[in-house]
Figure: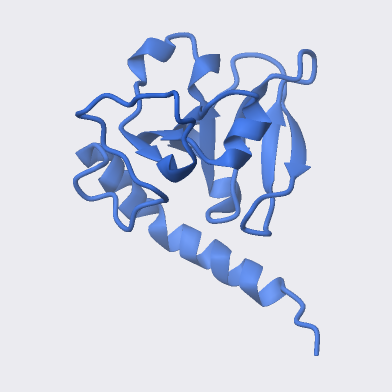
Length: 152
């Protein structure tokens, strides 16, 4: 759907690098060629945490599910793909915390935090796929919200 280069401090900490490159796919489109993944729940700034799926043998992070869309979207670590060169970033996010020694290309689409709409940023096919998935994401969010316990 889209490829993000995320420069937030959480991604820097989790990857041990200056940023992470995540390709966003609908979970049913994601297919492991062999074996299984191991889900590790980690804290996140949103408070909802996210699930990082790792190779059970080498522990490399393969993809994540974040609180906004839960298990419906997979944020795949592009470096784990057979042909990562085919997935350059469409947009750079959370550049307010970008490492100061890293210079982005002048033509790069970038945002200090996140952005409001994928229109004009994502490939057209990705925008259409997101629109098709939106009702399921909203239902998942409503279910998650209904399950939260509120302290008196």
